[in-house]
Image (cartoon, rainbow, N blue to C red; front, side, top):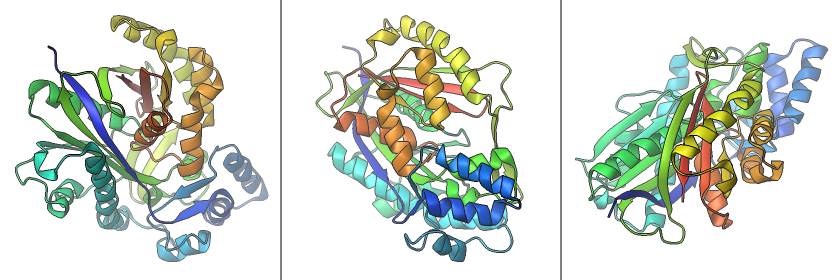
Amino acid sequence: MSVSATIVGIGTALPSHRIDRADAEVFTQGFCCETDEQRRTLSALFRRSGISSRRSVLLASSEGDLALRQNFYGETSPTTAERMTAYEEHAWPLAVSAATSAIDEGAIGPDCLTHLVTVSCSGFSAPGFDQKLIRTMNLPLGIARTHLGFMGCHAMLNGLRVARAFAGSDPSACILLVAVELCSLHYQYGWHPERVVANALFSDGAAAMVVRPSTEVPRPGHSRILADGSMLIPECAEAMSWRIADHGFTMTLSPEVPDRIAEHVRPWLVNWLGRHGRSIESIGSWAVHPGGPRILSAFAEAVGLDRDKLDASSAILAECGNMSSPTIAFIIRRLRDAGAPRPCLAIGFGPGLAIEAVLLD
């Protein structure tokens, strides 16, 4: 009997404090806007963001912009070194929280884990949060570590591909996949249209999954990984980028991104699903990474879906903002808990412009 990789536990974690859309807009105006026209543009951008609230490790309370301003940002923009110091301090506790939840849900002991796959694009340190996880959670000191860095919003799906490969090559494997992003560390000062869009969308969060080999039909609450796929959209290398600068990491996000995704995603999906004996019509539910409302709308129109098929993606965006790589796990868990029909297709978009997808049953 063939061996499948199965997700047996999912955990998610958010920072303790939140900032609502109105307070986030006021905060951003103070650091980014110099003219009334810029303030009007920013206000419209926040209204159209689809986000009601977001979380940040930098918030000292849930009382709005003043708590964030006093805690980290001030008269001058923090350097990348200062931002990385904050990443090293705050990333690992959030990762531990998500990982603990996933392990508990998977009903395994930490000593059963054989592989640790970590994902992040919002910070670097060595030793990294993977070693913090091992030491804090008493994971085996010989656990095999793999880190996926700087791949962006779709990287949790890349992590599932790696976990699937480990599960397929070792019937005794038990893989912990952990993604953590602290996007609020990379808030940008001044008026730059693409960077202001990033300020309006991104937030902090963590997610984890436990993946094991299986020769059986998945139990209720488990998800078997049936297939994974990738595509680079041609002639779009600079449409979305994520680069290290002197004052944090900076994003390029072209307004053409939704249209380019819409142009290429359906033909690729038809071909990829066909190779696995599936069709778009056969997909029961959709976990689409919510890069923003325009991306969700463009995807739904291109693939031929009613917009309400992406309600789980829209709800996570509204409640949590765009947390980059962990976001897709929040959506998969929301669909699973709601008893959404299977198979489920999880898909995300990232720098390059790249498409990553995983088919779950």
